[in-house]
Image 1 (cartoon, rainbow, N blue to C red):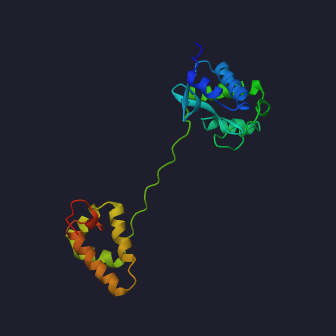
Image 2 (spheres, rainbow, N blue to C red):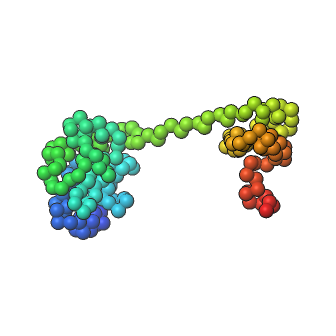
Length: 209
């Protein structure tokens, strides 16, 4: 069943510059021919097509050029293989100033069908990068020794989040001289024993002035 055209896309094309209208109309025709089941919509204020619940491709018109791009990451390799991959805000086909800048209709239809097949395959379009765990906080020797002598403070310190422990370690480490470092170390132990974070004075409800 062919997709219903979104009237907002008609409005978008009609409002584009003279050079852009035939480009946008042609791209739209190719997308709907290659993947008639795609849902036509507008996202990020530009015509977009969705297939199998995932972004398929999109186009946009600018002052002096148009852009067309596929969403699935694997399409970059497909376009690069044919020498069609270009840079640009939407990636994929780069700056398009006339229909002559586009690959042949046969190629474009094949690209859209390939993108649709990728969406249908369930392969992740753009996998999220793995989140790196924050590095463990390295406690300086003098703080470690002080905590070893005070088991209650040590237990509290271990119960703090890594970011909270890091704040104490960095504060002590930033001391310019031995006297300042000793004062900060003593103050840190006092606050840690009381279960206070390094910047407890700025926390809501602390009562500090």
